Amino acid sequence: MIESTSNAGVKLVIGLKEKAKVRKKENAFVVEGPRMVFETPEHLLKKVYVSESFDSGVEEERALLSLVQQSVSVEEVTDKVMKAMCDTVTPQGILAVVKKPTYELKDLLKGTPLLLVLETIQDPGNLGTILRTAEGAGCTGVILSKDTVDLFSPKVVRSTMGSLYRMPYFVAEDLAEIIEELKTKGITFFAAHLKGKKCYDEYDYKMPTAFLIGNEGNGLSDNTSDLADEKIIIPMAGKLESLNAAMSAGILAYEASRIRRNG
Image 1 (cartoon, rainbow, N blue to C red):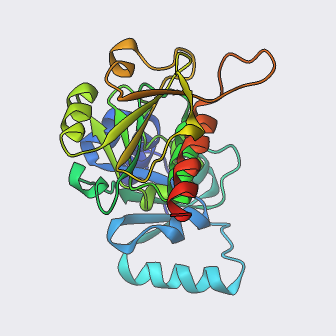
Image 2: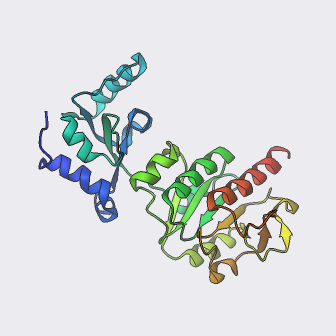
Image 3: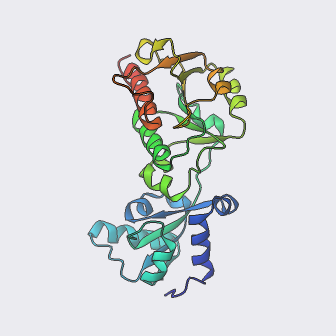
């Protein structure tokens, strides 16, 4: 049993938890709790840690932990060490070091593409919710500007509720360049924008489609919104000036999904 936070493996977990540069260097991140650990695809699992008081409880969890032990190293740590390794205030007694899933841009373009393109999203909860929403709405991928909050930070990972493992993503070093490239592949870009001329539900999204979603406070930059083929508006009653970024993404993605389902 590991009893000290000076252990090399423990120090690595803490570094992965706290620093994006460590996650980038190691090409790995940390997931906490039975659900996220047991949902992790086997080929992405690097190592699992359980606390001394961890109770796998239900029979299904015991069986899953047994399977995990057959394919990856499982280390036991004291409760104190587990707390230091976890980002959550109340650890659930199990965490894993996970290899980042990686994709190429072409992986997001299968079938008739439906993309969410995010510029400078900063709230971890928003980003995680957008990934979950993208999966639910049947999006083929999510593109992130390089200055968007780290997809593999602990709060984002928790917010994805496992969608992180299933939703193809691509981090764009130059977002404008990627948008222009995708336009040449026949993808139509719609910008959620207060200056939109038409309501979002006045369009047909059966064609290859991408929705541009901007920063929570400032919306899309002028440079990015000017690249859109169409600027669309989500009508709002009352005195609201804008909607939450995740809410906007959900409304648009599900409208496209509805249209596609109905033929």
